[in-house]
Image (cartoon, rainbow, N blue to C red; front, side):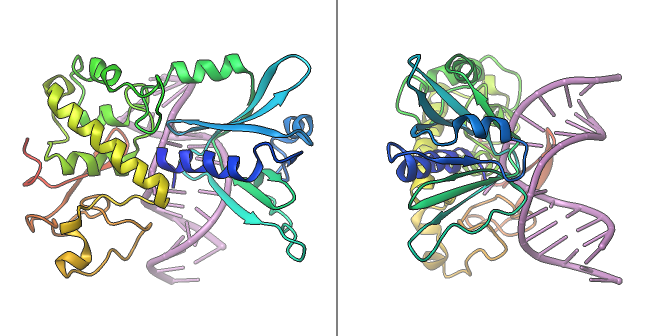
Length: 281
DNA sequence: GCCCAATGTCGAC
DNA sequence: TCGACCTTGGGCA
């Protein structure tokens, strides 16, 4: 379930369980990270950081003053599972698909199926930041919406594709892309250069709010209070991954606002969802 | 059991 | 534009 909110939430979760809480056991039961795991095994986790969909676990190296980072990207199917450890509840034996396990006295965290899990230096981490656009979930210099607008306003590419381009905006995925365009009534096929500065400001502000809420609740909810199942007397979403949404994976179903059919189309190898009636701007 | 899709990204042609 | 990659879960036989 990895869009940016998931990754920022994971950074918080890893830090809460391990940061500055003593030595961490680092293992790779699956075997693809065994060498690096052995190098880090027994060191304390110092910090966790997230930019877009990239997660970084920092282990301070005392001798020369620097930090070694585990760089993690979940890709489409990577998953992290967290568990508590107690006197009578030891960590369960990892399955053979666990790429990385961190374990301390009170908790363990398993990582499965990532596209990236690599040990990198500070310099390499900086290079990752450098190729990512601003992230609505950061609060530092990596959260400047003007940097995104400079690219968007010069591009003939559709706004739907631009929102998914991590060099333009970091952390937005297929769900937030579809939902934020719906919330602003914007036709996903409009070229970036036709998006006004005011429209972009509104989209960015909305992404900040939606994604912060996503970090808090660990799911994606995008419907306004007046469109919730309770408010509308409609059944809640069933098939799914949790949150209430307007268009994502709702092809051929009625729009919550106008009642027309939600449409879907292929766009750059991903499924796009939108309401042609509500998104005419 | 098999087949497919999935909130992602990269590189080859 | 396409296939490759990483894993799980659901639908169907």
